[in-house]
Length: 260
Image (cartoon, rainbow, N blue to C red; front, side, top):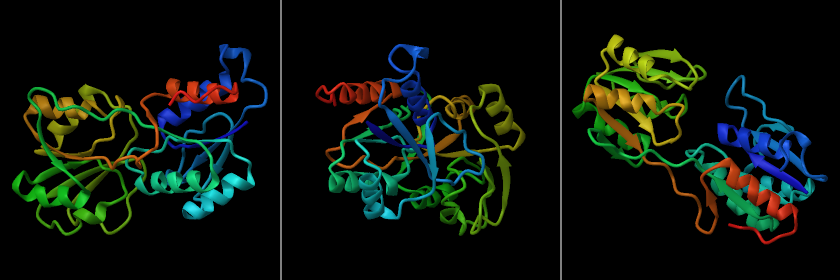
């Protein structure tokens, strides 16, 4: 059985580890299980998961469908970032075309807590439109992609944190902080204090690795602009954790009815 994992996330890497370990841990995978991990190649030094690895795009839904057929893929797991909307919809179309079962693995989104001052936005453009009324020193944690949405804001100052250096167009008043999570609460508190941040902008990526910034903002009473994640295509089953996704693969490999 051949499983293709559309990855690049910690959940995708954990799923690959679970499948490599097999149901009995270090005993190894069930015989006949082949796992291919697909990485988009947008990060310069990705953490490589176990199994076969391919890097780069497929050429849209049609290209992915052709790849599924050419490589005799039996199961497709979309474990991409919650905001990787294009590949998610391409995966749904490709899976339907190639008649390959598809599962989406999505970490749960963040929940507003007591004391949070959240302003929700449907896109980065909407988030940028909210900023002039909220503050002048912005901590932008939406990644290096999509900075063009903020490029027209000449007055605010931005601290942009990303794994790799962003590319133009970018906000004219900007400092770049190259860093990769997980981040600590003490570190996020100090960062907000040192840079005199008065607004935080983030995508609802979910997960624990980057959540401390939300706690630090809550403690400081700062407004947070939260960009809502795009929906998973209708009809695609969704699980919240790698363990559930691994069970889905195991059930299929054992010839049983898929649990989701």
